[in-house]
Amino acid sequence: MENIEQEKELGVLDVKIENDYYIVSIRWADGKENEHHFPEKGFPVVDPETKKKVGAGWIDGKKAVKILRENSANMTEEEFSWTDFVKIE
Image (cartoon, rainbow, N blue to C red; front, side, top):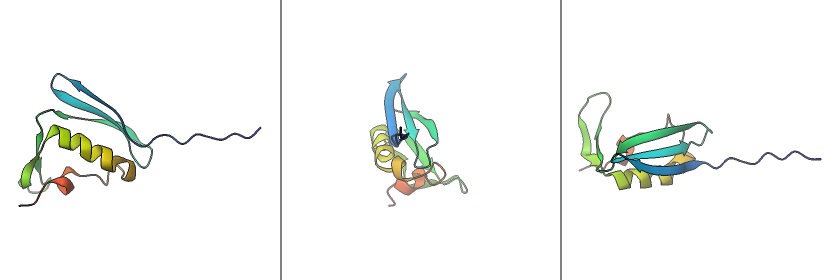
């Protein structure tokens, strides 16, 4: 009998809202799993080195879920950065 291992689904596995926060369960392209938590209303995005806002400096909660849905299956957590998805003014 041949043992065929099923490939695990990649990307966003589950999205919940609790206490006005999104809880997004993710399996990244490398198979690692974790959760991202952020406010429904959105959150500021700053450059980790300069601590200054990047571009518009804000990502809406619904937009953040959309970004994770579209990108997490093709990236590792280490490759992912919110700064790549903020509109540059």
